[in-house]
Image (cartoon, rainbow, N blue to C red; front, side, top):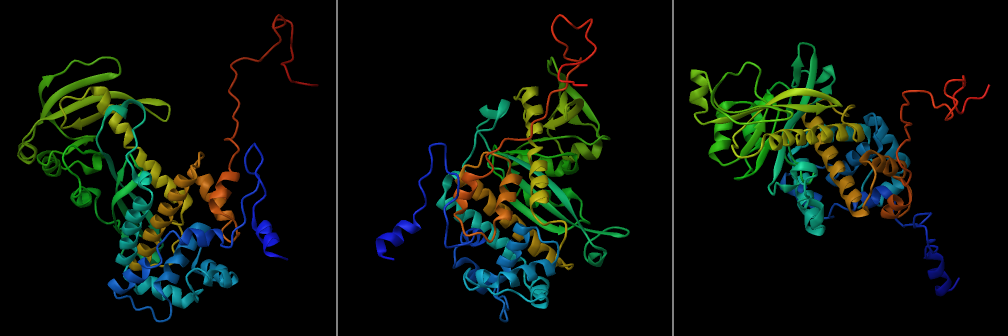
Length: 434
C-alpha cells in the first residue's frame, strides 16, 4: 500500500450533514487520553518533592491505577489489579506504567503520603485553568442572583462510611467508622476551592475557619446551621465577608428594628444576640429573615441570619437556595466515583482514594467542558466508563453519543380523555381497546 492510500485509510469518513455518526479512531485508548491530561513531569516532580519510596512501583502507576478504579467503578482492590493485568499491554503504554500486584498496590496505599495526591489535585486545577481559562471562569449566576457580581461560596461536609476495620482511627459512633470531607465550593464554577479530608469525629464548625481562610472582602459565604459559631461569624464580619446562614433553633435575639416585608417574606428585622455570652461573642448587629421557601416542591418556613443590611429579603432567601449546589456536588461525586467501597482501611489509603476521586471528577468535568456536553454529568461518566479501553477520540465519542433526550414522563390527567361531545354517554376512554 503506497503512502497516498495509507493516508486515505487513516482519514475518518466524511460526516453527514446531520452530524457525525461514528467517532474517529485513535491510536490511544480513552483511558490513556484521560491520563494524558496530567502533564508527564508533574507526578515525578511531586514524587521527588514528597520523597516517596517507590520500590519498583512508581507514583505514576499508583495514581493511574486509582484513577482507573474510580473511572471503572471497581469494587475492590482485586478488581483493579485483575483488570489492569488483563489490559497490561495498554496500561503499560501510558507513560510506562506497570500493572500492580495486590500486595504492592495495598502497601502503596497504606504507606505513601496522601499529601502528594492533594498537591496533585490543586496543581492540576491550576494547569487546566492555564490551558483553558474558560474552565474556571466566573459564570453568571442563574435566576434572581444574576445581578450579584461577586464570588459566592457554599460550605458543607459529607460523611463517607467506612468498614469496622477502620474504627481505630475513624471512630464515628459506638460501632461505626466514617471519614468526613469538608469543602468550600465556588457556586459560579461548581469547583472546590478548599477541601479537608479527615475522620468524622470532629464537628463541622471545627474546620470552618480553615475552610474560609482564603476568602476576601465582599465574598459571600453560604452555610447551614452547623457552622453557626458567633465568634467565627464575628471574624468573618471583621474581614468584610458577607454570610447567609440558618440560625440554631435555641438562639435568642433582641429585635432592634423591624423592616417592611410582603408576599412570601414573613419577617425581616435587625436583631442583636440576646444572651450575655452571645453578645460578647458577636457584638455587632444581624439581620433575621423568615420566608416561605420551596423545598422539593413543598413550601417550608425557613429563617436566615446575615450581616448584610441592604439586600432585599428575597435576595437573602435566594442566596440560601443557591447553597444547595454543594449538596448536588456531593451527590454527583458519590454517584459517579468510587467513594463507597474503599480499597484500603487505614487513614492514608482512604485519603489517597478520596483525593484521586476528586482528581478523576476534575478531569471528567474538564472533558465535559471542552466537549460542550449538554446532558447530565452522570451520562457523560457512563459513556466514558463503557469505553475506557476503546481506541477512539474521546471528544468525538462525547459528540456522537448521549444525544437522546431524557426519559419521557407523561403528564398526569385529572379526568379521562373522552371524545368531545360524548363525555356523558361514552364508557370507554380514548386509546382503550377491548
